Length: 208
Ligand code: TYD
Figure 1 (cartoon, rainbow, N blue to C red):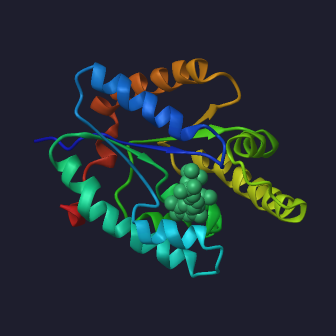
Figure 2 (cartoon, protein in one colour; figure 1 turned 60 degrees about the horizontal axis):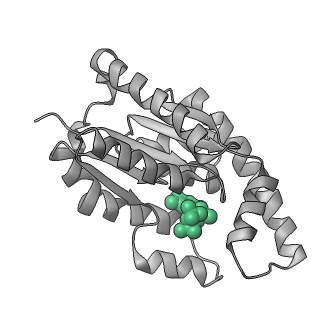
C-alpha cells in the first residue's frame, strides 16, 4: 500500500495553526480520507516540563519526544495509508532551537513531510491573541523577552521555504475561514503535484 500524506502545521504562538489543523482534518475526512490529527510536543512528560518554567536541554527533549511520536503514532498511520496532520514537527525545533546552518543535517534524521504550512502573523498579533486566551497576566519584562525571541523565530520560519521546497507560508492575519481557503488551495495543489514530483519525499528506507 502507498504510504499516506504527511502534512505539518506550524507558526509562532497565537498564529492560529491549531485551529487550521482541525479545520483541515474535518475537511479531509469529509472528502473521505482517513486522518490522524496529532501534535508535538507528544508526551505528557514533556508538556509538563514545558509548563514547569525550569531550564532543560530542550533540543534533546524535543528530539526524544519526536522519536517516540514517530514510532508510536505517525509511522504506523502513514503505513496504513492514512493522512497525518501534525501540529508542530521538526520545523519547530529548527526555528526555536537551531540555526539555519544545522537545519539540513538535523532534519535528515526524520521522515520528511509532504507539506509544511507556516501560519504567519506578526509577533504583536500572535501575542495579543495569546493574551486574550490566557487569563494569567504576564509580567512586562518577560513579555518583552518573549517578544524578542519570537521575532527571531518568525524570521527563521520565513526562511524555511528557501531550504525546504515543501514549505509554504500562509498569511494568517484574516479570519479563520479566509485563511482556510488558502490552505485548501495549497493542499489541492500538493495532491496534484504529488503524482508527478513528490517522489523525492517517498518513505525513506530507514523508516520502513
Ligand atoms: P504548546 O503550548 O504545547 O504548543 P502551542 O504553542 O502550539 O499551543 O507549546 C509548545 C511550545 O514548545 C511552543 O512554544 C514551541 C515550543 N517547541 C519548541 O521549542 N521546539 C519544538 O521542537 C516543539 C515541537 C515545540
